[in-house]
Length: 284
Image (cartoon, rainbow, N blue to C red; front, side, top):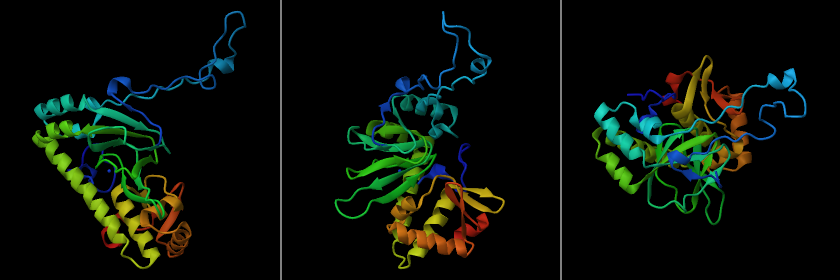
């Protein structure tokens, strides 16, 4: 059953997993601060009245605080009793905010068992001692990830909120029948994504790797449009190259070939597959 907040082609409640960002408890989530450039201009005592243009400036919007105990998608679909128990456990979980483009290692956060992606889209990048960087898994809203290893880090492609679940908190959530089912499906989905990503590397032709990865991303994170399925997060040649373990130049040639064949088209900062959604399962 699709969770109410899931917006992609596939049910992401079964899920599948920037540097300086802070882990904060819900009570200490960062608020947006007014700066001299974005604060509304008002009259200053002794220095005249505000001009009509000053008074017409829109008010600065404050960032809404994310609170796991009330806002987490893990609570969706639970009955009243299970929801109350899960909310009590989530109230002790830390909330991690990652701004778009930020990177974050979790070496300073102890005892992490799972990361629940609440909002936004991110990837887990591996940095081997030698060789190129690779993306080992991607995750959108309503995804669950295992914590990155010492050689991996999170990178946010859009603004993200993540609930950090410790080992005791995960064990307590698994004791709640409704929440346990969601968590098991989520962690199983994360494993499936890693297995799918590894299977694409078996393709000898790099254009096949690119096509298979685009299909997977459209299936998991696509939005249906009148003329195809758009991948709903920023996707560059460099990022796609890290996803398929190929050189950027090779991926560029593969995309050019797929565009000439009418399979895919550039759409803003991402790509759109020019096929009907029902064709995704047989497009690989």
